[in-house]
Image 1 (spheres, helix red, strand yellow):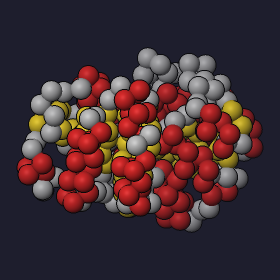
Image 2 (tube, helix red, strand yellow; image 1 turned 90 degrees about the horizontal axis):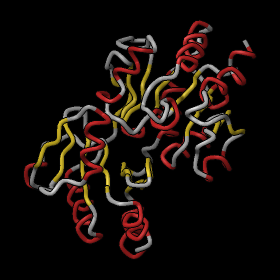
Image 3 (cartoon, helix red, strand yellow; image 1 turned 120 degrees about the horizontal axis):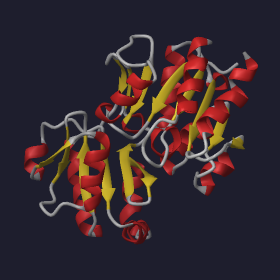
Image 4 (cartoon, helix red, strand yellow; image 1 turned 90 degrees about the vertical axis):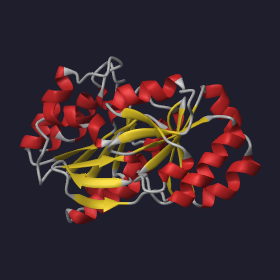
Length: 272
């Protein structure tokens, strides 16, 4: 029986207008009333999640959970950490150098700020800061020594990131240390090797005395693939990329047609 519903936020939980649809709120609350844990599982920092947790009645609770930074942080919605694995300064130096070699923008995100060493800001850096409610801070690499770094991001036009990824001789040595995952065509997110949404869900399931068979995961992008594969019930949004659809048990409607609500009704509410 499903006891955890893990839901990606952007283009999954939210409509294209970045809002929660009434049907989504209604079905999530119905699942909660039946004792199911609804876990927002996202690349966002907590600042970019808090408002949605409040709308869903999940905010500031010690028995409800949230996974942020693509799995680098697993915590209660009240802020008590269960697991945290970030990048270190040596990682930052190597990734920042990678961005320079590739000619793409680079940034670090934590719960306080979005940090960049690029004085000329990418429009996608500004977009991300607005999306997740973070201030942008310019810092030189030397000034980043004491900064907490849950995740990094390579940011640029989709075609530039695609061309950059094709340079295997540059990426291959770093793939032993890092996960590179698309959360959008213009965002390539980077976490420590072994840190991803699927691994974070496994940590949370163990913490709750549950297994993968008790987990349903719903997502649409490359950074959701690990949790779709981990969950006993993996669900792809109708707007998901092909890899997600191929890995999932089934495909629901898209994010503008109540895909999350329909998946919860099909796999959770009818079975209680």
